[in-house]
Length: 397
Image (tube, rainbow, N blue to C red; front, side):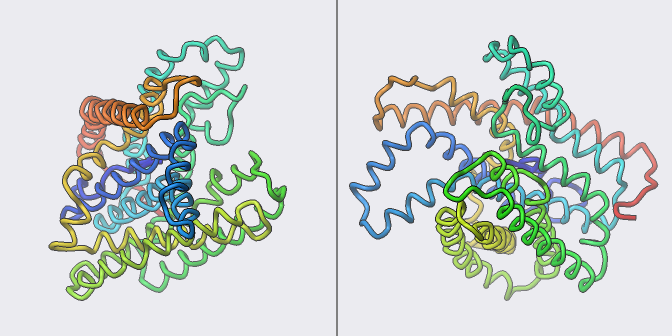
């Protein structure tokens, strides 16, 4: 989730995106580490839960476990960052051709993704022998795996979010002008209308498919995967980019940015707690609106940080992970599987540390190789082709 396209191409490395914003890479680093922690925790949750319950004060145990259970929030952060990055790039450029925009997005996510599919299948050849594999492969190649999984075959588990990302790219090609390139009142009204509509639709879908007390596949799809239930996060990211452009030169905004961070973090935790408590209950979709708003506030506040606050928000190691986060996203589940000790292995802190360290090292290494040998060359080729070709059709025009 990641992301973006999963991680969307960092806007601050786009020539049209203005001065560098290393905090965007840092946030991508946070997002991918959260996703990694979620999948690592799937293997060691009993060990961690036991330690928390024994050592933490009883009143805060539910809050700690809520935060741990919601590490998948990294995908939400990736979605907001995607909207922020693409909108910022469009604002800086003023206008952008539809065709080249979609071509650049395809170059950003598809080459690395296709290579990751091939590598993953090399380590799981049993999938290739399954009767439904040809249809499943087609769905993955067309980026439909988030909506369709023939035979229940999933090649890269986390890659469902690429389907949601791709849907947003198609929508953004036409939403860019009314959403981020028009006057302030116009874009704010349109953005707010989209966000509120998504919240209402998500709530309606939640009530329509809910089986109280049970997490069903249809509930997960309507609340987590469908673009109609996630578009608010991309749009909130785009609105945050508009706000950033309006405030980036303000000293007062820079001073208040750490306050925004301090406010958004506990708000996120509250959203996690409410979402976890009411997700399978009537009206359980509404806490997600708080989660989306808090995530957008976090991204905007971080982007406005300067000076010492920037140094704290965007340390170099975290930025480095963020730069290669798309590859880490594509390979981290394979790395965890390769480090898996099996069903009968004891749940010990030694095994936890070994799995976490080796899998993370493998994931970051694979991410770096993907970035240097696949993603960067693909983007350079598209950039060269754009410089030599005339542009005609404007985003949203």
